[in-house]
Length: 96
Image (cartoon, rainbow, N blue to C red; front, side, top):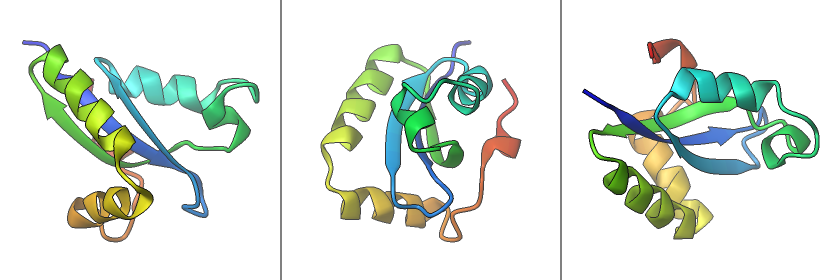
């Protein structure tokens, strides 16, 4: 069974938020952490996983990512706080 992830990354100061989606979150987190300074996440050191959710259907993941990307910063922060109020790095909970 496939699992698709919608996720939010931040930097150490929590001043930048990045929303993405992927089928292989562990691999994608590695790519974000080791990408060049030319990419958004590389330029702003956005590597800390603070939120993720899963779905079985790629279309749901695409729709949810687009929805969250359109949200203002306050809504994204509320979403993160609802499941991760301490903004801990959640990457250790990913097993794929």
